[in-house]
Image (cartoon, rainbow, N blue to C red; front, side, top):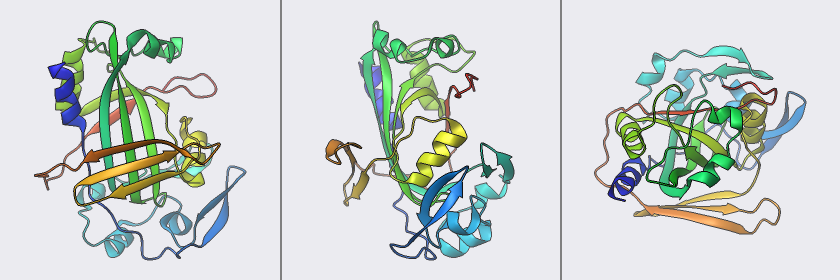
Length: 263
């Protein structure tokens, strides 16, 4: 129990609250084509202007408070992912909150395809119990404009490595190298949904997700996509004594494309 609590505390994080790009035209949208899908985007936003490939000089001009030094060593390249895009996709400012819960291990295994279970398995934090990570993101300045997202993922071992239960979970947190299988990934913009589904075969759908923040807390409200009514809320206290040095965290997942290929 103490190990699980420690891991939960380690992965609970909240980043800075960003501002919107000045070039976006308030409340105005236009429709673009992505692989045959009509997608509304913010007029004058980053995606409208640059299609996932904005120059760093533009980002530096629009958000001079950002430290962009790490991105200078990360050049983009044009890729075909069902449509032309640029990789990596960059999120310049965001805030998030993550909580780790235990869950029935047998149930978690049933939620994963058999061929993926041959590659990675849910971590057993104690007999009969695995772990899931619930994360809420507010991406308020990124290559794909601003949007909110909820991730529900089963915590797994790293592909090709042995699992030592809670020690593996703690080790992933300490090494900042986290692995999982994503079950749900709703978003609140059609641009994020279409790019995620077509480009990466992610389990995304469109629904209302509202982020709120006070001096002490951050919270998210997630709506039912069919009724528009509140489905659930997710809130937590902000962390104190935040670091201001750059840090690298790797979040990896095993996925299955529509054609059956594992990645």
